[in-house]
Length: 241
Ligand code: SF4
Ligand code: SF4
Image 1 (tube, helix red, strand yellow):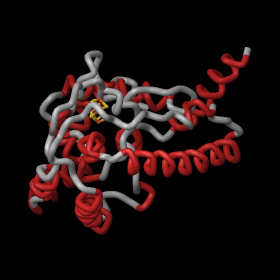
Image 2 (cartoon, protein in one colour; image 1 turned 60 degrees about the horizontal axis):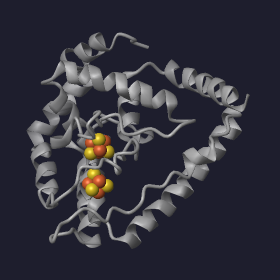
Image 3 (tube, protein in one colour; image 1 turned 60 degrees about the vertical axis):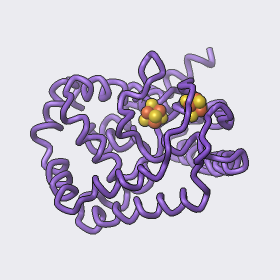
Image 4 (cartoon, helix red, strand yellow; image 1 turned 120 degrees about the vertical axis):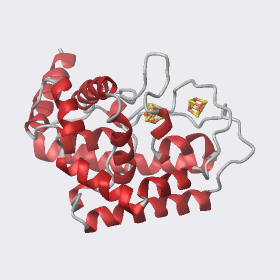
């Protein structure tokens, strides 16, 4: 693992060929522009900035992640800070609830202008769709819980898996995005991603990942996964004492 995040940020900005090639590919194909045009369909509305919806590593498509890296390439110290926060989130994710590592101490998003689709849509969900999303998350979490028990003898606490953020009723917008348009935009962005799969920039293991997981998957040493398991077991056993 590269523990020096300043050096890792420097590497990502100046030497990571995969990122460089993927960003060039995106520019040649106008993919960042397409992504931003899709985002433009979602009006911002009035948000009180409470930050309650910024409670996890949000689902992010590859082109969205690339857009974020392209943005962070202009700000090495912000990238270094985010790499530190990402690692902290990842190491604690299996045993305690955490906020999104992109959130600053004043509940502001550090990457607001390039935040993923999921963040842009949060206030647009109806109560019904919000509950549906939560039930889907619960189902996924059950699969994750079983996976860690079966493979690592690690029992993720229920309060971590059941965490629920209430539907946002404080967000004001008289131009809310319909469920149909949400589905359309998600599909359109997935279509962009499919080119990057086809070109070999990403493989099938990298499907449907969270923002933190993209950073870990692409930039951190594989040994961090095992360190996380051991660290989580230690912390969980300490809590039982
Ligand atoms: S969208 Fe809602 S929950 Fe999220 S910050 Fe705005 S007011 Fe808070
Ligand atoms: S990326 Fe930004 S807007 Fe999205 S959850 Fe994280 S802090 Fe919130």
